[in-house]
Amino acid sequence: MIQLKEVFKTYTGRNYKVNALNGIDITIPNAQYVSLVGKSGSGKSSLIKIIGLLDFDYRGEYIFQEKRLEQHFNDQIISNYRKRIGYVFQDFQLIDRYTVQKNIEIASVIKLGKLDTVAVENSLRKVGMLEKKDSYPDELSGGQKQRVAIARAMVSNPEIIIADEPTGAVDEANTKGILKLLEEIHDTFNTTIIIVTHDKDVALSAQRIIELRDGRVKSDIFC
Ligand SMILES: Nc1ncnc2c1ncn2[C@@H]1O[C@H](COP(=O)(O)OP(=O)(O)OP(=O)(O)O)[C@@H](O)[C@H]1O
Image 1: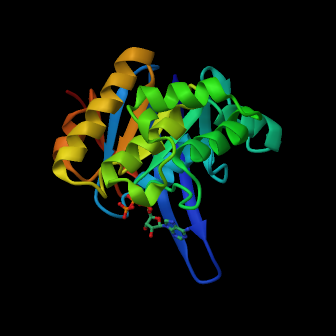
Image 2: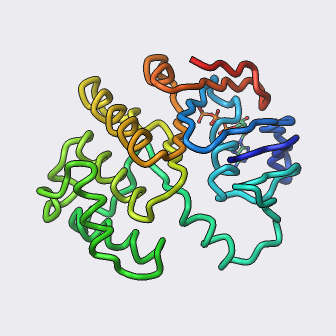
């Protein structure tokens, strides 16, 4: 379970101060499939960076699987927590000069601290991309690249997948394929899925839709 209690995030610079999150209270039980929506600037990215343990500079409380996360945690502890989260990005963030397999292998080394060839093969199989393991990212369609990115997220067998606009750069047919894949992962492995989207249909594919406005939860609907 993920719990955020009264979370505030402020960006400050020499000439600016932006209150991006203004008291977020959210509980997401394990194995829930959630979409996070809201207008541009409403705080979605700020929120998933905190949930995804990519930003510790906030006020409030974050409880991750019953453990309160502390901002002074050292890198080793943080990376142990990050292993439990898989990230999927709109622009795939694959390394173009490496094959599909090598991309996943690198993630295995980073996330697991070792090359786990079985985990690499399994995650490519799960997303139906094992046959393309020797291809380079620029030989793949957008939908195929996103499948590889999902395989990369799966390599550490994460409890949570955070997907930031995963269908933002693919066409309608591939959007359906990616949503089906995320749904299968959710159903098969009980993975918690948090998907940020601007697309109403994508949002509706989730079990729950949380809408942010001005850094606050505007609505929280169970579908
Ligand atoms: N690094 C930063 N420095 C200063 N302000 C920032 C920074 N990142 C975000 N902001 C501001 O914080 C607010 C929330 O931004 P955030 O990126 O979280 O919103 P969002 O809902 O993800 O937007 P989008 O849909 O456009 O990605 C906005 O006013 C934004 O300008």
